[in-house]
Each structure stands twice: as C-alpha cells, then as structure tokens.
Image 1 (cartoon, rainbow, N blue to C red):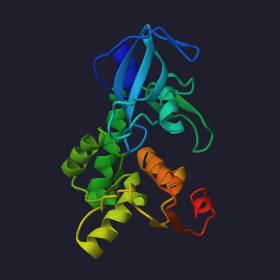
Image 2 (tube, helix red, strand yellow):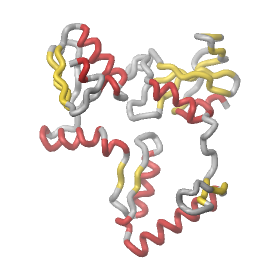
Image 3 (cartoon, one colour):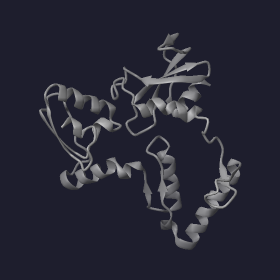
Image 4 (cartoon, rainbow, N blue to C red):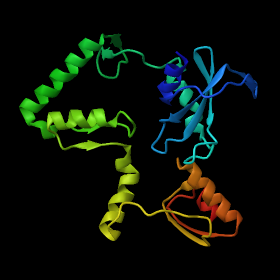
Length: 231
C-alpha cells in the first residue's frame, strides 16, 4: 500500500531503508522513487508512515538530480492526497459553465469518449482530432491510441518547451541538443533560458556554482526574470 501511494506521484520501487524521524516528520520507511511532475524526473525519497506518504525529498544518490527537488516536486505528494483530487470520471450535468457534474462509471465515460471520437472521425476524418498528453511514462499509451486512431496531430507540453530547442538545433547544427559542462565555463549566453526559475534543478545548481567561480552571464529575454538578475 505504501508503494502504491508513493507511485501515485512518481514511479515506485522497493523500499531501501528505514528511519524513525526527520525535521518533525515521523515515518516508518523510505521508498526510493522517481518524480513525474515534469520531464526532468528527479530522484526522490518518499518517506512513508504506515500506508501514507508523508514527505518527498531529493535523493542524494541519484546522479541526475543529485539530491535536489524543486517546490513542484515536493508538492507532488498532493497528487495523491489533495482534498480536491478527482478520483472518478465526472460528466457535465448542466449547461457549459454552470459547474454541474455527475459521477460516472469508467465504462460509461470511456463509451462516451470513444463514440465522440468515432463520430468526429466519420464526419471530418481522423486528422480533425488532436491528442495531447503530458510527457511522462504514460505517454506511449497515448501514442498507441494516436496511431490506432490515425491522426498525426499529437503534442505534449514539450511542444512549447524543449521541442522548440530540439527542432532549432536539428535545423541549424544537425543534432538534437548539445551537452552542457559548467565546470570550467567563463562566459554563458542564455537566450530565454530562465534556468533559475525552471525545472532543470541540477543544471540550475551548476549555473549558480559557475557564477560563484566568476563566470559572466549574458541573458536575452523580454522579461526581467531571476536569471536576468544574475547577468
């Protein structure tokens, strides 16, 4: 039960070790897992008390995120326990905007969705549908549905994020994404890369450490962000 609870916010694996208490939080054991709140997928230690996750923290043994976990990742615990979390399908029972819904079974909800999709396909063609999902371990399921339905229209939040960088690099340099090594860098040019407010926790840490060593930052952005404040 504890593993299932932890994996609601992330991808769970077997518990590794136990500890009695830390920072006022009582827990029975710790489950090393993976954050699914964004594409960075930081390593997480889920502290579990009984069958409930009570705290999420960065895993210092994870080489990608190196113990860091942003505010979004720490709040991932609420995907399981938020009082407003929707736990079953809801179907609108009034006019659009009235906010009236009724509870439905999964069979009814899936039947309504499937029939609506087929109606659109038969009337307008498969290309009239666009599929969008978040970029996580569930993405292949949506991709399989997309291929089966026959629509080429698919996107994730990456369409407004990393994909723009990848397409630009492919068209300009012929590769998807360059590696970054901040250990000896002395001059950094960031074009809209708001690292200090972004999801890339370990890379943000590398940037801050390079600034502490005296590296110079040139930042291009129409907004005065926190990263701009470092330039």
